[in-house]
Image 1: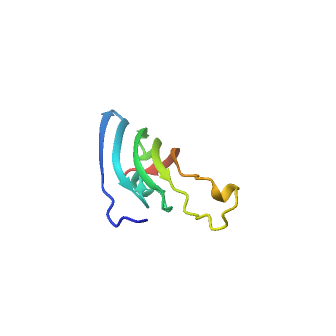
Image 2: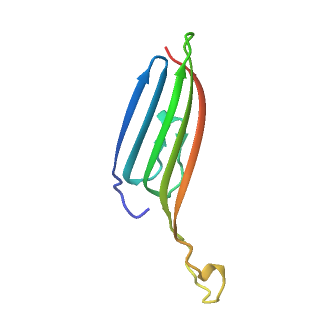
Length: 113
């Protein structure tokens, strides 16, 4: 973590129909140690996330119980932080830095007051 400032912008659209709700959204910028899905998903690693898309749907029953399914696909840059001090060929001498796409699917049950 070389930077001390990480900024991102996020936007989404929501649609409500009777007891159903649907949403889609996207974000771009730099994030580390992100907390998403209303605190339901915590990213506690130092990967630098660069952007992503997300969406979901939910249904609230008459008794207040709510079920939701959420999908999130984010891109992050994974940087090899090991230095090759041995000067010998092998895995430590290979650059393993890469851009990775992470997909998360969450299902939750809650209560709506």
